[in-house]
Image 1: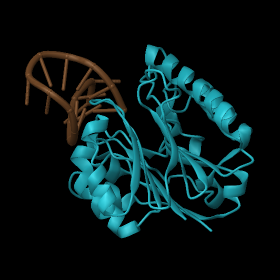
Image 2: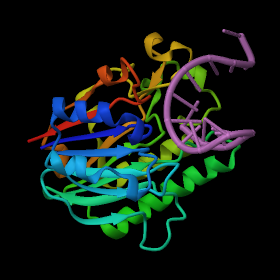
Image 3: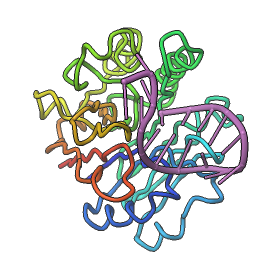
Image 4: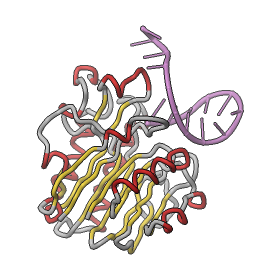
Length: 255
DNA sequence: ATGGTGGCCCGGCCA
């Protein structure tokens, strides 16, 4: 099974590139973040035509997450509960090919003294509770998406440039550690020890071409799935060219 | 260079 995750920064703006990318990589499961669409605007039919079932959770201008699957898509859940999503349309889950898949978009946080940073930590806490209540890490579970957290200093272009910044702070990294301690593994790190491999680059100031990025898009998998992992690739070619997202897709092949 | 770009949708927010 090939599973991928990609923050597309508006599916409306990115649809031509997403369709090209699907044709090239042919993922069995593709998780998307920042669709920036309401459910009614999500292009269900275009994906159905390619053989993908889909589940989307979005309310319009901000956020929005989705799962596409050509290996079945059962028991979708949108948000953390069936109540109105006060957490902002940042998680959708479904069972695809026997794997419980979660597509997540963790709040950015903005800065350590910002209300949004407290919201980010609260959201991560809610995610941990949600997983405990709805999943068993002894089964096949994937939690993937834009975490807006660089797991360690290898995952930023210059650690000294991030002193006092969000994405690298200890509370955020501890919140990620809670998920790992629960029974998930960062699959990229299973296959790669090197630093300087990134999944996001700011649009501004030529950051992509200068190599100033971060690895904040992660695929976390339970032990049984990690044992099946054949490799992880970040497709930085998807960050090149005309009208790219500021994120690159992360691709995992499972035996 | 304390800026820069790009998406939402048209003034300002968000990343």
